[in-house]
View 1 (cartoon, one colour):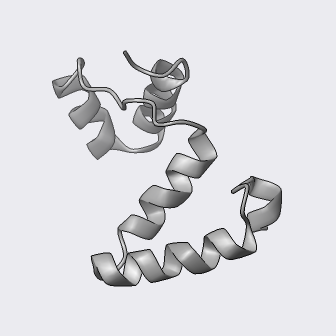
View 2 (spheres, helix red, strand yellow; view 1 turned 45 degrees about the vertical axis):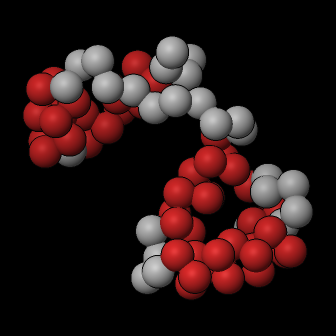
Amino acid sequence: MAPAYWNRAKRALARRDAVLARIIRDHPRIALEPRGEPFFTLARSIVGQQISVKAAASIWARLAALAPRMLPQQVL
C-alpha cells in the first residue's frame, strides 16, 4: 500500500520534470513502500546512494551521531 502522500508527490514531480512525468505515467501501479518516518527514509536513501556500501555506512553513522532522532531541524 502506497503512503498517503504518494499521489500528491507523483503529481508534484510530474509537473516539474518531463522525464519523471513519462515514467510515472508509464508505471501507474509502482509506489514506494512506507518504511517509517518520511524524512528518515529520505535521509537514508540519499546517504545510501554514496560511493559504496562501506562509505554509506560510515556517512550514515556520522549523521546519526549528530542527529539521533533524524529530524529536519537536527540535520539543519
